[in-house]
Image: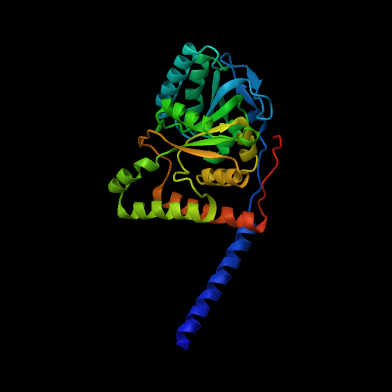
Length: 322
């Protein structure tokens, strides 16, 4: 019995040492919020090739909707998504002329012709409707979404993946979810598209190992960061302008786990969040490498919580970018 007690005590002591080591590593390796832009990232091109300055999220809105599309090496998948989105948005504007919109494609340092492909839509629809923000270097999906959001003009801002996995007309579902949130403190609210209703089917199609990784990730999200949201990773989220400014100003994580930190920040600020089921289809060509990406996201989840605990990261007031 004494032997077992000694083993338990040793394990507890080891766990405490590991926790302290993780706290120290998390604190010392914490990066700060980086809202700076390269000079080239401050401008977009018009259909005639003129350079124009991007507006700021701090400015009053001048469009009903902004759609931010992060794109890294997406020259092949982007056209299908853009064709679907532009057809929907143009039809909606014809039915309701007071409806105004913009699409901002953020080329996240691509090595292919993503920017050239996106600029074809600027030429076709004008830079008033389609703008391309080309990042000088790859920041990661979270960094690309943030830079596009900070350059937007919309009263509400939709984050939509370049692969078109979510049916674009489902924007009406997340809009309804956003409108149903009451009250909205300081007009802040977020509506998240969700694939949670598809989970049973996806489990049946996945290997046992990938299913284990998926549930492990869900547990870490719930345990360390976000409560009450079943699907934090669906790339179809709608923000009020005020909520976008509040959350993206504090965002640190720029890679795959950025959604989790974004929702963690929102819950810290007590911003109401809706979760709405959307149609979703897996599209070939994903940049997510199953094992290593899940491993990186798991590490990020642990470090997100630890860095806020140690004070290495703090919730920021909404400040302007350079």
